[in-house]
Length: 394
Image 1: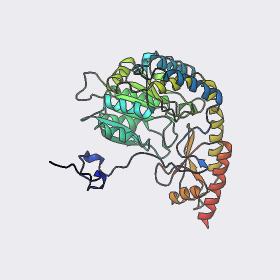
Image 2: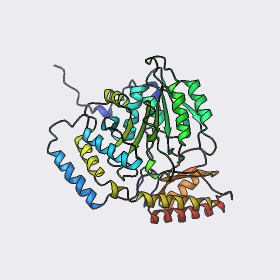
Image 3: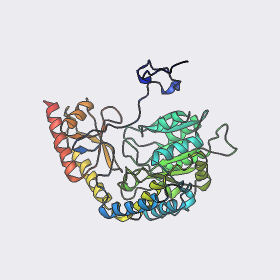
Image 4: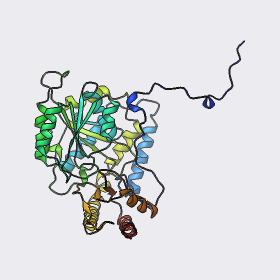
């Protein structure tokens, strides 16, 4: 009789795994999560939900918990209707509930888009610098990834964008507006130029007449300055446009993980094909619906954060770096500011961290990004940055 081995399998020499070659050596995405007094590195809303919001969420989640023995509503039309109502209020653009899609954060929404419209033999295109997760969505869906360039001030030249689309013939174009990590918003004319060029793309294995899908990522849209348009205004003219949003930022609900988009119904129906069954839990649906009942109070701090952002930008532009050069700050319509340039940005980042302030070392060389926090947090940031610059200047 063979006696089974009692050896701990974790102590044995690890077997080789058939990892996809393009994943070899890759590290998981994620900003540092450190326990420091001032967290200004991942563009969170610094204001926690009020107690009445918490109470509504708790009550609605408790009600959903009574039915957890059943699978959740696959198509969650009540939540999609509530999101459509919110978009109409926020942007003035009314879409039907069937034109809205939601998932576990806008990250999953983006993955659905690449699953549906990317894939082997297809290309996804964006313009760098931009959100660092975009190439990972492409990688994970076996989609070829290509980037054009932004100008030195991080704006996007429409002629360059059109020429790049014509040369690369992508099936998906990803535009962040406001852009992360720069904060730059796109003029409507630029988005329209991209949409027109995308409509002329002919993806080899797509049906006749099918152009590229253009995704405008508006995760920070609620923070945009007065007069900055939303791409939602273009939906009725361009059926190949998808505009993505999130409840993570302006709604102070990063822990909820609820992202969504608006688009033409055929586009949304394509995403329903690739989503996993019951991908949005009953608890998430209940919590998101409850939060939307308190839209006014949850968004009450947006104006204050805009004012704090503008004050931070003005203050930064009045400072000089360790080399004596004036600091430069990118124009921003978001809840963060990209500033620089520093000969050694890591030394500045580390100096701030040593003083209990965590910001993000991201974007082009020499630049740093600070999320906008409470007035007290921003004062801590200003004091710490002044000290670091003085220390590095000596």
